[in-house]
Image 1 (cartoon, rainbow over the protein chains, first blue to last red):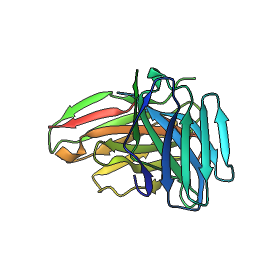
Image 2 (image 1 turned 45 degrees about the vertical axis):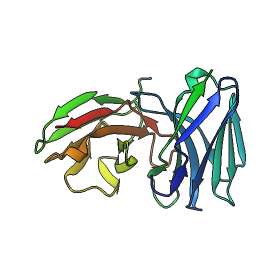
Image 3 (image 1 turned 180 degrees about the vertical axis):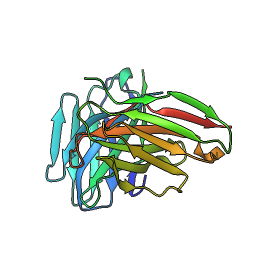
Length: 111
Length: 113
């Protein structure tokens, strides 16, 4: 994706927390998103955060936004095998309606 | 409420042919966007339609086109297919152009031989 960067792979032990990181470049971004893609499926919206927020928690998911550093993270607590998927960070810029996606982070869970 | 529906699920074509993909958005959603997903390029924005008008376009050649009907259903067309057009084509819908939530279909996997 253009201007949204993520690491490609992350491996965590079952039961541990996973932290997936993302950086973006456009300071005018209004919304930042995390999507999940399982094999053979489309993208599922997990959570999103408005650009004037710092943190959002939703059950096992915690999103942290550092607007100064243009850094977004997704923490998954108590990671389970069902969390194995590709996680995409995305931003919506105020100047255009399109949503720009990162390349995705493949999360694998080891026993 | 039914989700975003894309048809067909899989498609095999040969070089030079053309293809039409269909997308039915969630009921009540008026904005439809299309994305191309490939292992090398990730998710690339193709175009967005709202009220039967193309509102936004990505950096794709003119062989890629689309349209939206009055019931918000959308189609995209790729003419003169090339091997590099092999990809998962994803459609997404939202209530309107400013709504923050974008919901995706399962995609159409296009293979060009």
